[in-house]
Length: 175
Length: 353
Image (cartoon, rainbow over all chains, first blue to last red; front, top):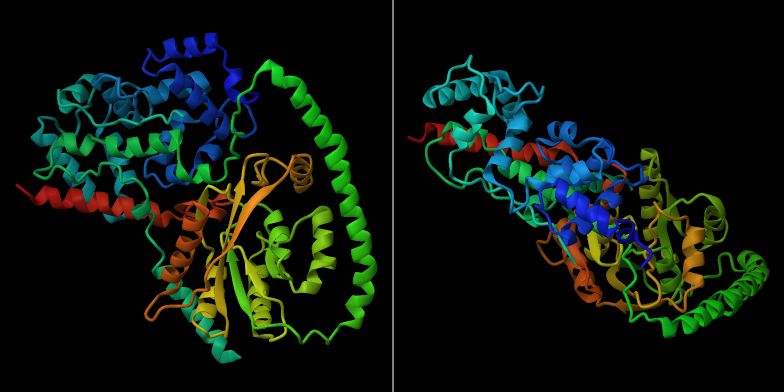
């Protein structure tokens, strides 16, 4: 039928599938492509920040501005790669990696006290004072064997999250 | 007059308070406060529930689904049917479509030639009208109005459209008492509210038809009723205006054509063209039992009950969204609610040992 799904050839699907380490089935990729085209209203080949925010459930999310920096302007391949961390097949390490990236907003590979504080500010808004946030974080870092001045690396994150899995799964609707 | 105005504004502020919670409708993502116990660094760093919600919204969300044109239902296509299909196209475009255009034009000529004299002759002579009723229907396309208008001359409240539709609105439809508004102008809303009140109070006016969703939805979902409309039919249901609320459910059969007008993708002319070149537009209309306000019911509860009745009859899925989110962003209130619950759980768990 003349709609989008036919615009994605079998070759394209396999390429995207390989790019995201086979974390999505072919049907899921076709389904994600339809969603991508739906959000990319003017068929520019990427989804703009404004278009992401046109989804109210996303705009309402406390971390939406932070996530926008990660997803703004992604092409379809990178869009799928971003979402692949949410696949049920993705490893815990991959999920931790994504969480780490959200904290590491400047992308320098390490997360400082301030980085965590900023995420905490997004999450709690005006319902916690700056002092409260600092106090909570200082205390918890100390209990986990870190200090205010230490930088957390990806390995630290993996250690902190431990082997207990993270529940971070999103099902792609396939019709 | 001033008394009723005071009442109107007071009840509109109370409307804000008991608006249903969006969270009640959404699938609640696994919340942070689930595993109780002492807060550790891991719990604080674990933003996976929030991320899952965000990614879930990117992959699929109930709001966008309301305004998605649905692909035609596939049928058993094979090459032997191709000549038949071609024949169908020829019939639809070369016979049905011109025939419909001719009927439309002739209809217009007859209508206009009698409308103009009658319009002047009958002024002040239309006391034969019956009791006021407020009809409330779900909205899929502008042709909803045309379909319902077959029953009686409704006065409808609609958005002012540009182009030839706008011309039609301001000339002909004005005479049946239709009321226009402009979505972008805030001041327009006041004028509409005023006009509305006048219309409802006038005894000899046409029954009022409102599409309280305020925007076209794809006939599979139903979005929240707009506040302004809500007030009108709440007052009607409370007999304050001396009239009743009649829910109307409209369900289109997509067998030949999808009647949803996706105003972002096509103009009304294109939409009409699409409908007029199809085999037929099939739809079911149910005029449901008139509803009145139950004792102790708030405007929101009443509106939700009416929405329920319509949704059940037309087989629509209810979603908690305001249809105007197509044009604006959700209020920060919802985000704040999430932030509040996060902050509370962190502070609470910090004290636990």
